[in-house]
Length: 176
Ligand SMILES: NC(=O)c1ccc[n+]([C@@H]2O[C@H](COP(=O)([O-])OP(=O)(O)OC[C@H]3O[C@@H](n4cnc5c(N)ncnc54)[C@H](OP(=O)(O)O)[C@@H]3O)[C@@H](O)[C@H]2O)c1
Image (cartoon, rainbow, N blue to C red; front, top):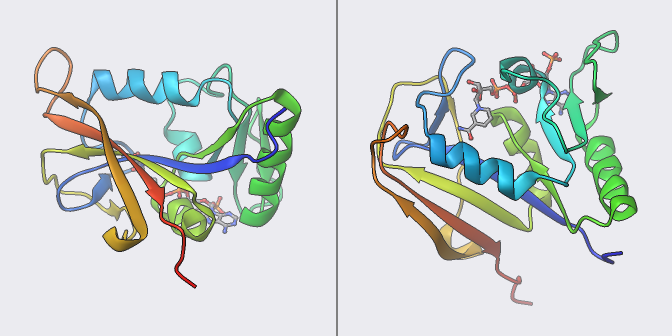
């Protein structure tokens, strides 16, 4: 059983940091969806109510789905529902430990990335080579706080609306 569970954010953002438009993604990136699936499978995932409602199939299989809403009457069949980010992330960590997973994933949207930023050990970021119109953006990431490694690069075409690069950003230890 892993003794530490990493809190990871996973997101795709445009050059303008846009991540969504009118409750949906502003692009179709087949190979990024495949990366998302392979990376998150077997790990708990935490998301906001609007992202949950945007999923074409709910819950996402092979992962414990945790949904945040302030509506105590909200029902999300197949998911656990929480009204506090701290409670949701603590539950996700406990489930990961129990299931032998070494990560939990925060999968969006913007309000939940915001809440998760101070908890994050790692960000898997898909940098999309586009600047689409949109109504939600990824929060500011200070480059000095993160060590970045490139994982994959993809050309546009064959199910990918745009070229994109997937990077892994690990939080650098604070200097004391
Ligand atoms: N590109 C990407 O990587 C990516 C990833 C995920 C989503 N998206 C896109 O992002 C958009 C959705 O993002 P969003 O920011 O509008 O919505 P969201 O974060 O998915 O959901 C927001 C909702 O979550 C609940 N919530 C937020 N903070 C909370 C807290 N601290 N405690 C309890 N509940 C809380 C509230 O639900 P109630 O209103 O029910 O109280 C709030 O309205 C969509 O366009 C989606 O396609 C993009």
